[in-house]
Amino acid sequence: MKVIDFIKELDADFFTGVPDSQLKPLCNYLMNTYGIDKNHHIIAANEGNCVGLAAGYHLATSKVPVVYMQNSGEGNIINPVASLLHEKVYNIPMIFIVGWRGEPGVHDEPQHIYQGEITIKLLEDLGIESFILDKETTIDELENVMKEFRKLLNEGKQVAFVVRKNALEYDEKVVYQNDNTMNREEIIEHIVSVSGKDPIISTTGKASRELFEIRERNQESHKYDFLTVGSMGHSSSIALGVAINKPNQKIWCIDGDGALLMHMGSLPVLGSINPNNLVHIVINNGAHETVGGMPTALSHLNLCKIAEACNYKRVYHVDNFEELDKVLKEAKNNQELTFIEVMSSIGARDDLGRPTTTAIENKENFMEYLSQI
Image (cartoon, rainbow, N blue to C red; front, side, top):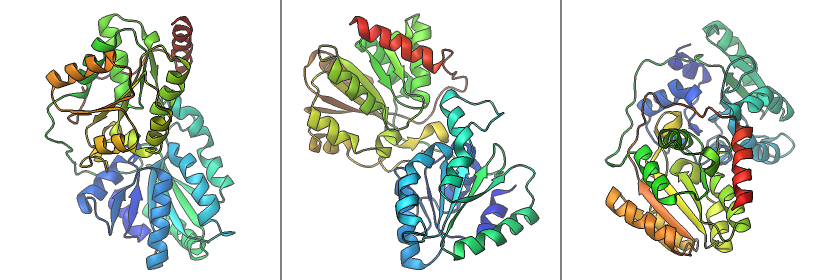
């Protein structure tokens, strides 16, 4: 189905969400049509943030907002849906568009498998009526569904479209780029070179895939790395848990701006605990690149000032490899909680692979290595 036909039938003029590769046609349409526009389209920090923002829109306008997300974001909406939107509380209508990663019977990455199995059930448990949108869905079917959905929305309830792979089409392209010169994979190569055999916890998406391939190229063991293939935004918290319990071992966290934004509340927690053996590196390309490249809210903010305010002891901002190497070596040798923001270009190799080990193997090898150091 053409995205423009889908959007027309929704009859909505405010959209907020977190980008998803399965919803890339929708995301590209919104960017081409509205860009980032406070009146029509806002990319939020996380899916719960979207729900709150959309609820405020409804309170101010009486109109029905649309929230889009990957199904992994369902966990983030449970609280605001159950304790804010629900008919037993404020009875606020909302349309959800959910990209169905890990759909049963469709091959996908391990972090999506269980989430895919429970996608529909979670919506049912939340009392959200859903319709599965696929390539065969016709305009007439969509019109009939929306007739029923509008009855529910008029009663203050929420509805959802669960979108299968390739269900939506949009022909126009959007090119996402910035002026940064360093490439993320090369940045990670420099981190690996300096960190040596220190444990690394890497964030969701392409950063972990690149770290895996760098180890392959270097003929190094993967036991040094914990690849956070799911749970976007939690890699720094995982790293904190490791650092606390391995106080004599330097621990590195490779994070991204989109992931950091999703659960930025982890920063003051890290600062308050103040582990002197943790190096937190945020590779900032200002984009949700793994799911298409849409911009993040951190593209023009001063992350270093935020880190300083959160009690990080050493804070660095780098935009070239000479400075990066210098800062990495300082971080390797110092004994203070360190934050490094590294400015990166948008883009990755077309032939970038995926880890060939299972998530369980990664965990077991990493834990075995930690037990020995």
